[in-house]
Image (cartoon, rainbow, N blue to C red; front, side, top):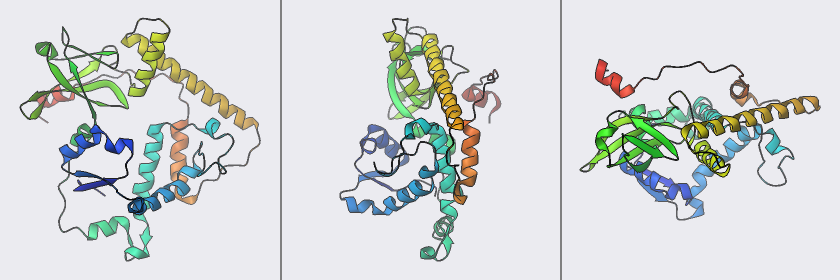
Amino acid sequence: MFCRPLSFYTDGGKDFRSNHLQQIGLQLGFTCHLRSRPSEGGVVERPFKTLNTEVFSTLPGYTGGNVQERPEDAEKDASLTLRELERIIVRYIVDNYNQRMDARMGEQTRFQRWDSGLLSIPDLLSERDLDICLMKQSRRRVQKGGYLQFENLMYQGEYLAGYEGETVILRYDPRDITAILVYRNEGNKEVFLTRAYGVDLETESMSWEDAKASAKKVRESGKNLSNRSILAEVKERHTFSDKKTKKERQRQEQVQVKPYIPSPVLKEVKEEVDKATDTDTSEEPMVEVFDYSQLQDDYGF
């Protein structure tokens, strides 16, 4: 429900054997364990099945539990982004799954069962600290003028010019790498230096995967590799994807198909999906970017 675990048990998947997860465990103070036998995963396989039948099977692009169940046009119907899918899963767990009454838990919901077993309120990590902890890490050398290069993008941050030639630690969110946090090792501690922004990307959003794929495309086309050329390629990819999705929707509207009826459990979730997948053709407003760390220093909050 909340608070930091003492132990974290997983199967042997690649993601669970990564340095990133070991780093998170070290910072949060929990030990990672890999299950030794398939039977040890039964406690989580049941919730997976519930998610599959009550959530995933109702969403566009669902591929079925096996080849026999796979719809013919599964890929053509797929229209959700990973962020939209993440929001749907979280809403289902918080608003539905954890609120169900269960006879096996003394006619309590999962949330009530958890709450009744607490001897004291656990110490909570602030959401901001947790966000930073879950970020991925990389190391780069500060270039002349205080610039940093990461995933073919150039960044600049205040005060970085004073650390020219030093290797610093970068923390970044793979969902948006237009801004990164820069740290320096001092003894056994990481000391925050500054927030660095992608040059000409201050009001943009770009995922790690988009940047990587677009940089490869720009390089193959023989164009100069820069923040502007990568951003232009990202926008072109998104425009093409939006047009393709709209075309598929128009095609589906022309074909008489069985109407989709969401389960009562996911009625609210389906409405959220419809809102999230509506195409917005209006221009995004220009926004002013503030430095969070500078605001803390200036106003003391």
